[in-house]
Length: 555
View (tube, helix red, strand yellow):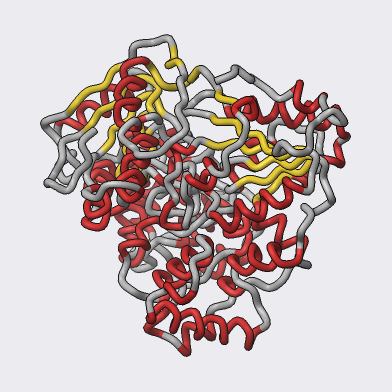
């Protein structure tokens, strides 16, 4: 395999290129090898040669597009985005069906579809992978429909129930004159033969996550450009439930000197690298990629004393040791329900956690501060600098049980107050019952006592919502709510592209996952790739946790 760290020579050969040879180049970036850095360099060089208005960059997800855009690329912002976003703009910004499903849900309660947020879907934030095993409601059938369409399967091969759903969904879209997200791609395939803004060079990042129809569209755009560069890693193709397949980036064959393989991981240490390589070499078809590990041994440890159902003892103790050493920890499973026990333990002990790659998922981000009225913001307003402002008071007092705490009319007085004004002792006396005020003033000198005072007086409707942030603040002080947690919890799908010093990987799979793993060929390969991605998130230590049943992958 020729060593091509970049495509400078290829880009400089404009005018000399043999047009009988494909214009497609592929950058294969194994885990942690700096694919974004390399791609950024290629984009800069393309801009230098062809001009800033001659490049189009498309990516599977907003996160990847934002990462590229954050590299201060010398291109206009509207030239960097997800494929769906490019198509939506090029098609005149049509109304999106999945955003407007109220009438559908009223007419089809047994086929209810969860309303989508347009920006989130256009930015490539797909539905949760657990929907593959979900009950056969509307979300399930819409996912199956999108997958079949994305893989360009003949409708005659669809199950009868799927054809029936497709007809009903099609009539609904036609009656409202809306397009669904898959329609954006299909319409672009029909109507947009040349990439928006007619670029000379087209870049497709995260190409292994695109389904055949999506990648076929981008390839056609690339064929009408001077050069087409794919950045991908077939070994990290894990969105199979959306129709993604490694064959889409492995076919058709291209000249060997059009393949660029990044050679060194800046993340994966030697022991993790060796074990992950043994696993990925079990797949039946892949692009061979020889790359060096990070120059550190690291650790790969098999745990025999704790699985996803029983994380209370050894796993929790080990996590705390790594946190004390200043390390970041990641807890990964193939299905979200396998994370429920460890999340329950973290909540019980007031240990902050989050998932920065799925910020919209409240279950994985219970301490998020996005909304002003979140539990976390209310507690921080209580524990902040004194004297409180009326804005602070409105937040932390709103959830108090008025009985035994607030005087009659207190809420009206608080709501009518100027947010910027400080809260005086006189005002507190007007608002609080005498006994409640006395205990409030007694606790106000100690943050823990003040927080306990508030937690005991929160109205019953809000008890469950404040338990964890209260526990976290009691255990770690207000800073525990203000700092980014050093524990990441999520499914392997959700953290793709992420990393941590320490990774705990649960090897268990769902019944559907086990059925795929027991087969030979692409279905088994998809499970192996999933756990390969999980393993290669580790910068130093990888723990392979105890399996809880025979339904597990041998790692």
